[in-house]
Length: 286
Image (tube, rainbow, N blue to C red; front, side, top):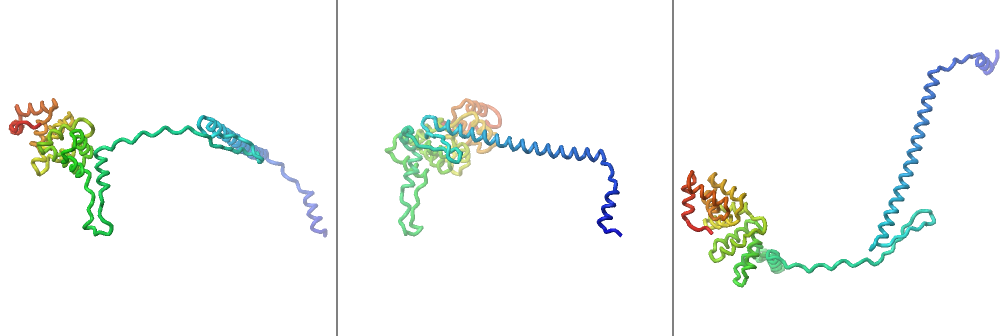
């Protein structure tokens, strides 16, 4: 018997291998082509990325040089370093001085009142909370200034307009007290003018105040503010019987043509005749 290796050689020499399938060769060629195509795409992407990075670096350097060479900016020079990298060296040059600031404006009456209220002492250190006196509110401080007989008419109108600009309930109440007083009523109503938005909503709330004098002062003020939009709002209140008497007084106190036309129609005919004539019988609401 021959040894195993000799026998294996005999078998291999006698073996006959089948011919390769044509479809298998096509599949192998297709797989090889696909692999090579992916390699080429990846190589192209790497080259494109390097080109884009180089363009970005060049554009950044160009913008830096352009910014550095404009008038009034630090001068920048580009020099190569030993490591073949680009280094930016900057030196600061004298820049033109900024224009001088405008002198501060004079504070408004409302701002002056805030500053005076904040400057007042709030109590002695170590004193109990009950003995510490808080600073007066801004409307209260303005009312104190309005009581000063030395305040000029022009300054008084500015203080009144500050109350209307504030628009809070406390500020409107201080203003209405000036309207209630016959000695200051004309100045208070003259201060309305057309300098900005008015606290119309707060004044309309005052038409429902439990005090008659406050309701009448609010009605007079609304009449002096005037305007088609406000007239329409007051007319709607009259027709809905919402503070009808006070809304009619506001319309009667108005010099606007829309308000005058509404009062004239209401006094001639319709369900509002008696209420309108009762209001008009009071006389002048100015």
